Image (tube, rainbow, N blue to C red; front, side):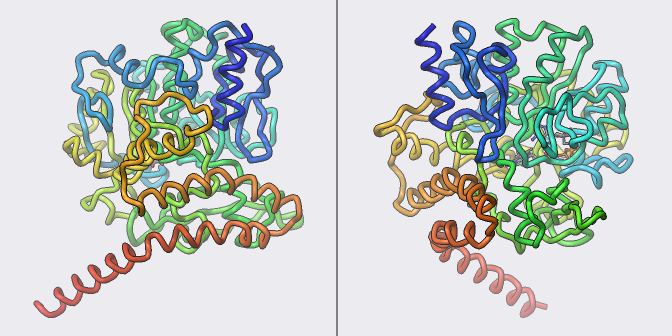
Length: 465
Ligand SMILES: Cc1cc2nc3c(=O)[nH]c(=O)nc-3n(C[C@H](O)[C@H](O)[C@H](O)COP(=O)(O)OP(=O)(O)OC[C@H]3O[C@@H](n4cnc5c(N)ncnc54)[C@H](O)[C@@H]3O)c2cc1C
């Protein structure tokens, strides 16, 4: 018993816990989910937990890894070292209805969920929804897991929530129901679900499809607060956030954020372009959950289908957004094929190399970057076992980039907590600026080269007219 206690303790105390809530579901007397001072869900530990609980934790390094789980679930599919097992690879968007305009990117996740419920394949969907729809919330949150059993509820849950969530309550709900659900989650949550299914903690037939979201990293609660506070809205006045409000022109990556906040006795809404704000740079990783620095799954390798943004030249020009998709389940493939045939979807077949290209930064951070992080962090501290080997065989520039990102992930949320305590956004900026400036300097020549290439291209176009 003592041994097991120590193992999960290392995951939690070392900052490697993503806060999925699987342990709190399995051992509710030993683990209670709480939002910590850094704005992330973590279990507070009151006892040893069930025997072998570390085998159910997606971050412990003791459980089956993503490659092993996927080979068990999708044995007939070819495997790629970066995207995992794959069947059909595609890119496109939803043409029918307004799924695309209302979605985070191409609208395919909500579209697929509605097809599953309309066809009776599932009775409902477990996904991340706004505060009023969260299942049994016991903390003041903007988003959390909820259960949707109608098309309108599913559609209300659309959009990407860069916000901490945990699933102990919905897992508990699943253990009480006899209905069939589709589950939507980021890679580590899907992995946790698979481990719980295998251990029989989730009865067979309850979750019939696991839909993964491609994931760069998860943010703490303070990411929303950071966006709002720099625009003059104090965190305590913020009510909700649309992290990806689409614009009518420009590139898919040039979206706005829209905050809803209280002003006196009125609720107000304001939108701002992400381009101009602190937090816009996904690579910099402000408010990143530290555990994400030790994850090696971008493509939700244990999911039946993974859906993300098609960050590819052919698709980024359209501000309405487009999806990249890797299908691993034949029933889901049929839904996509039918959708494409009927004209509900625009869906192009693409190569594995295109999928990789569309997520190149995330993948290099989780392979080359992770190897380096393991080599420095693991020098004199415990680190979970990963599929990537520790390695410091990379350029000094890349080392500095990864080191900088690690520091920013480690400190930004706790510095923000202090800034809120002393009621000073300047405190946050003054403390974080040296780290952000160092990071920015590392990309100076890349920016110069990109600009020169752009000027060169437009000059050439002008001269050859
Ligand atoms: C934390 C996070 C990081 C991401 N990182 C990347 C990335 O690096 N690269 C990339 O290409 N794509 C990334 N995505 C995925 C991308 O933002 C879109 O969610 C995806 O392209 C699907 O868009 P859509 O229009 O088809 O989905 P929509 O139709 O808008 O539906 C989205 C569905 O996802 C659910 N959902 C939203 N937030 C969460 C959450 N936090 N956890 C579980 N379910 C959720 C919603 O409930 C809804 O059902 C990320 C998403 C999240 C939540």
